[in-house]
Amino acid sequence: MSAWLNDETTPRTGTGTAPHRGVDIFALLRDRTGHRTDDGAAQVTASGAAWLAGASAHPRSTLSQWEARPCAPGVLPCGSAFDVVSVPALFGRRMLERLWAEGPGSGPVATHRGRMLLFASPGTAQRLPSLLAWEEWGTGPAGGLHGHEGSLPPVLCHGTGDAVTVPPLTGGADGGGPRWVVAPDTRDPWLPGPDVLLWACVRVGRSAAPSTTGNSIFPPADPGANVYDVTRRR
Image (cartoon, rainbow, N blue to C red; front, side, top):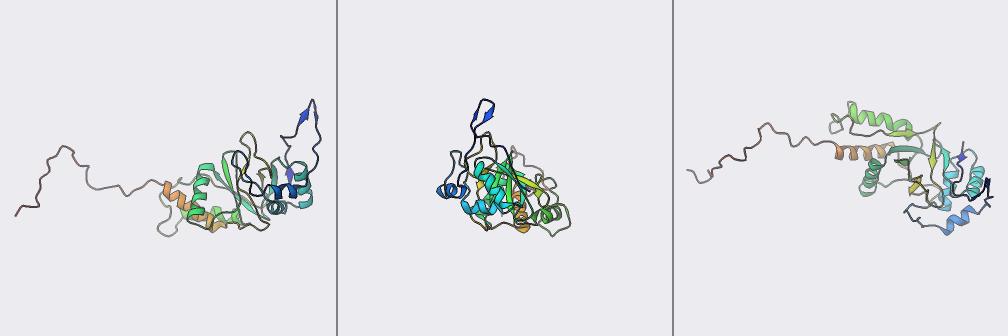
């Protein structure tokens, strides 16, 4: 299953729609390798476009739609080439910081409607929810997120039977539409599995959890109390 949305950037005259002449999408993407749009959005390479198209049941048809509308966002199915984990944008940004600073990095990442979409290995959508539930509220080992229920925001996992909106291959989306943060640039990108994303979620969740190290059995000190130096008393 694949579907391409209407190209909002196609010029229109009167009530008719001006024809959009097809382009060599691979040549265009090769020319734009390493390019970023004015809003900082990453750009897909020709190899990355081939990988994305492979997620659909009809890659050739998907590539033809891209050639007709290279600046339009599209919809691709999950479960075969990738799964997608969707988290709130701020939480996702912190996950990315952890993954790149302390972990193995990330696969392709996009933003859409205030959420960050992390592309993950197939099967992640099935395993990650149970791992998160066990880690945060279950009977896992000490050091988990027990006692901090609600410290993680809603994590949505899209796998087999689901579809997600992907940003345009070229150009940034106008009006806050989908855009690439880490664009696919190879035919076989590395994708994090459920264990890696669990690690990132837990690390970010722990850093945001309220600290309990400041609790004390003693009452607060009286700022007006007299303090005596007893170090010289014999």
